Amino acid sequence: MRTREEEWNAILDEYRPPHLPGGRATEEMWRMLSAAYNDPTFRALYPSLSTWSLTVSDADSFADIKDEFPAISAASGEYRVLAWPHREGICLFLTSDALEAVEFAAELIEDRRATTSENGL
Image (cartoon, rainbow, N blue to C red; front, side, top):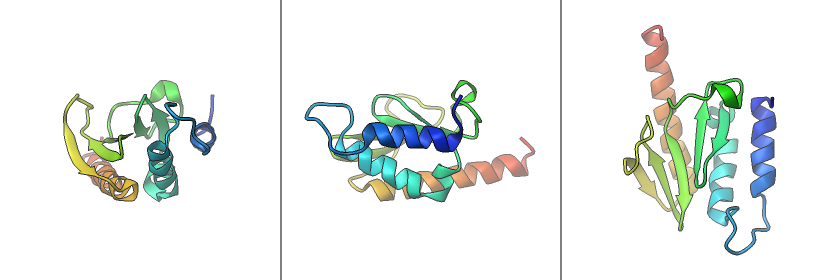
């Protein structure tokens, strides 16, 4: 079982340049993952990747990840912040800038965490 930091490092190592043409480790994914890792909100959470999306959770291990925060996807030069729970086709924000997507998602995560702690959940 990896810690949050170990999981971030494993993901970054997998997607680090150089990127092979047609591979799943793309420049878009690298930009998104780098921006997320450098953001304090994202870096404090446990990361998980699906094909083109990054999800984060307050979980302490992969097995405990819950679908509670927005995800960010990177494909074809676009970054989408996806709603939670994750439903196909629900995009909250679309941009060509990875940092913008991360910042938008981080604000949503912080708002959700604040609301959750205020409600005692």
